[in-house]
Image (cartoon, rainbow over all chains, first blue to last red; front, side, top):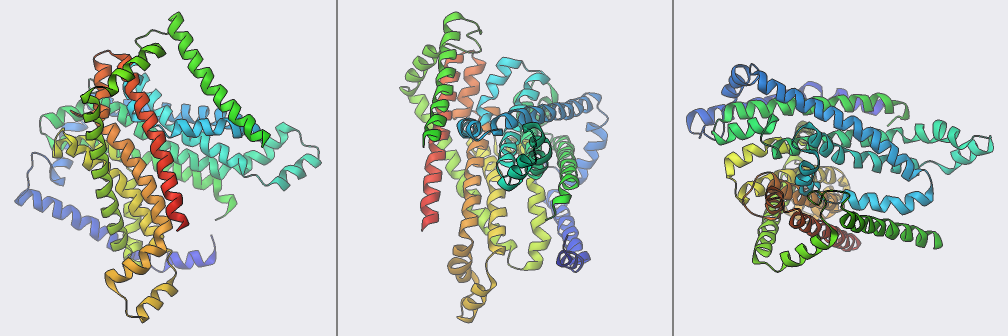
Length: 261
Length: 249
């Protein structure tokens, strides 16, 4: 981080943070007050009763806890598969100019398809259990990894490659010592996007299959016009999503710090 | 040139091999026709499908939903971007909130949209607009922050202020960045409207795909999916052509 950055960051300090807290707090207050005084609590619940529902209805229920935990496991499994698959396919596609030119457009073509319309196909092929959700999360997450791995391999400075070659490096040496380190920044960008997409895929599949899991409970609460536990459940899952995104961001920062800004 | 030709040849060979494999599977029955119906059956279903009135009414519903959602997202996104960048302080306070909210999968709130707007197209308009809003707002903020201060002081010294400043200086200067947001926003809108229709709806293209799956009519479902894929590719080509035109002006 450069000196100007440090100075820039120090100066606004507290006032920015406090204004932000103040804005968010007053939004919550307005939300609460509006619903208490005039609002329609059949559709939206005030924050106080959402928090209440979280601790009385959502978290104590072992079935809902199980559904949340299962969704988390599905995201983790789909994400791991997306990284492994994306890295493998990306390295294969990006390894030579020729394979990149011929195969990369096919990948981009597949990436452009709105995958949500394939959801019924996934449940047809994998059933309505966790397998379909993991597969759908994987198919969302794998593309950003492939695209960023290929992009990262492509931008390697030709001088570095020539230098390594002239010093007698083999193809494997070059991949290990030149291409991999160079790919890191782009690869981690791919990992961050892949987390967002995997979450999207798993949640879409969870909501589509409403006979079990998180989708069952959201549908149940929505159909019985019970917004408090609905918001509590959604809020819990949103926190989970934010947490997973943050973990990936922290890892990204750790591994790309050496490159500098 | 020959390398480019070779690459093209491989792409066509790849797609051709996929089609041949699909045809062969249909002939030999290696995969259950319930999961992968024969190519001829899908082609026949597609031909039958486009001749029905329901097809065009479903396409019409989805198109209207996408257009409404996108217009709302574009207007609110640009407006929000402008309001947030009215002062540097406000930008510093609000920009992280907007980008932080974008990190939450909006799909989680889909049941709330259904609860608030019902199961008809209105909930899909709201859902698509909510998804499209963020990239447009974030790019508008980024674009407006990047506008050279000299343009602003020049315009101010000529007596331009308020909306005139936005209309004649800020917006044109930030336009290239906003355009990127408008493109991303459009495709997010497109995908989320179709996704919303697939998950829970009573009409539209997505609903018809889910319905065909529920009724165990795989040929019909594949015909719909083929239509969506072609439509997505055509839209992609159209949007990038439009974007290039707008950028060159």
